[in-house]
Amino acid sequence: QAKKVGGTGWARHTPVEAETLQRTRRLENDMRGALERGEFFLVYQPQVDLKTGTIVGAEALLRWQHPELGLVSPLEFIGIAEANGFICDLGRWVLEEACREAADWPSRYSIAVNVSVAQVARSTITQDVQYALQTSGLAPSRLHVEITESTFALDTARLLQDMTQLKTLGVVIALDDFGTGYSSLSYLADFPFDVVKVDQSFVRKLKDDAASRAIVHAVTGLATQLGMTVLCEGIEGEIEWRLLSAIGCQQGQGYCFGRPQPATAFREAIGVTPSGKAIPALRKG
Ligand code: C2E
Ligand code: MG
Ligand code: MG
Ligand code: MG
Image (tube, rainbow, N blue to C red; front, side, top):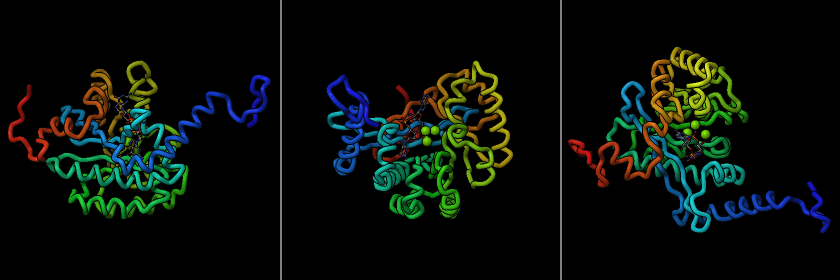
């Protein structure tokens, strides 16, 4: 849209828009080389059993350490990578890296990997997952594939087919950010999800908002009856932890239990030495 700029003539964008666009172009230009230069890395956030607070696994979250722009959030670059198709290569790298890391953990810990909308639509997700499992030696049941429900705005028939194929590999499938965006209760019945991740926006309002409590309660009841595990995101305080535990949510994730952390720090949290051996008796301090 053409906009009049201070009498000096026509510009297509305001200064702020131009700056955003320039940054987007920069990230888009740099991302392919960034993967080759090793600027992407994964951090791991604990997922816990809400009854005991015990770690049951981790979610792998992608980070980009840009040499000039610093740490860039996935909220900023995933969308760009989806738009230009780079998400396929990037997503493949994430799968392989996360599976390789988790293969060194004791087998009771799972690893959750985010899979993007466009990755499912554009790529060979089943083959990618199969390859990552084979090369890492990770047991399929330890891999949780987190799909964000905005995916459902796209080709649902194709998605159902991909999910069914993934299930035959033996991986666990989680519905991420449930309750936001294109949310619908019927997804829970129509797609073979094993885990429902209740979005952090509900968890944040839990203390003060009876409606949020009612929603989480209802979703937990429904998901449990359908045989799914409920995992609540964004648990920051013990009050929320207690509330969610009382509601009957089985698992949780959030700053209350641990921030996303480098692989070495997560290994320490689960008592694994850098060499990959489990420490017989975990000592602290
Ligand atoms: P997500 O999968 O829903 O991940 C949870 C986000 O919530 C993460 O943000 C995490 O750092 C943040 N979080 C965790 N606990 C708390 C808490 O207690 N309080 C608050 N306020 N936030 C918390 P992050 O790492 O910035 O990632 C944002 C989103 O980017 C992810 O949301 C996911 O959709 C996407 N993403 C991250 N890594 C990947 C990836 O490897 N592939 C794809 N396709 N998407 C990714
Ligand atoms: Mg996720
Ligand atoms: Mg989420
Ligand atoms: Mg999200």
